[in-house]
Length: 67
Ligand SMILES: [Zn+2]
Image 1: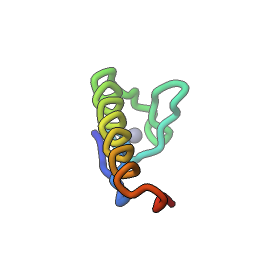
Image 2: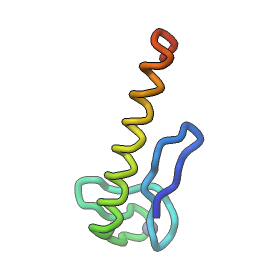
Image 3: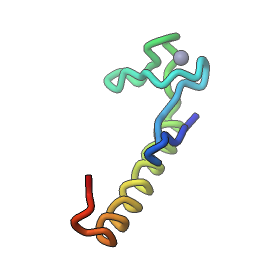
């Protein structure tokens, strides 16, 4: 599953236990060891792309006000 954090960034969370600690090298949850499905990873990649595009637009609109 995918959460959106308070900053608006997508975060990938475990489908099994809901935690957000993933080993990105193996694609498995640190807590319960569940593998992240390819679907979930693809969805997360899309969410990240969308977030990056949004942030690029916001950054261009608020030039000089980036943190
Ligand atoms: Zn888990």
